[in-house]
Image (cartoon, rainbow, N blue to C red; front, top):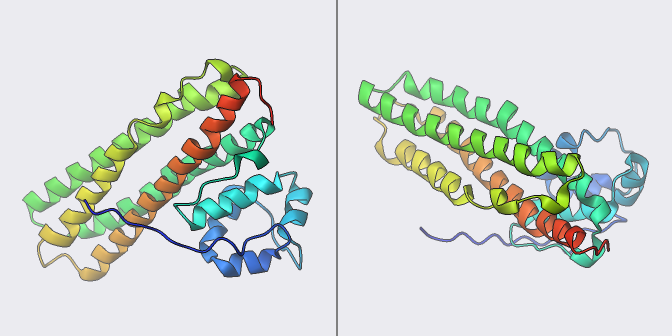
Length: 234
């Protein structure tokens, strides 16, 4: 499988940027505001002013933005503290809700439309691949909630086993590629191009967002928990 390299310039992002400038820089950042339920309007408010208003760590928020725009971006951990862990978990949990309650149903609605144009064999194959994918993702998110986030909520972080954050991500990514390959290569011509493209757009968007999600767990949550375990709060 070919490796995709994402290169986006995040050097322009700064704490004194106006929110309108931040969103204009990359409109996909709106999903961060949505997940954190940050209120509009902003007027000429800067990023740091918004974070101060909403009680959100500005350094953490800008790292969320940087890692959302650029999958290769790695955060400056010297700027992040263990007191930010609940904020990280809150964002990751909001992402879980986004995947389960919006993205998966949205993809499924496109799937249902496609299946009406398929023969019985294609219909059964695609349905099985998607159901397995949705089950794998749902079970992984539930395990994170039960074994990682619940420990953090109950302040038992030092005993938290972080292996759950690692294992199934490659499997989920492979299942996404399998579904995309079926839609692009093998479905009969009767399946409309518009419906295929709509489902492909959403499932690739979900795949890329899950990669961002995994990066936040790997490069922010896990190092901050490691700091907490060693007693280094800064």
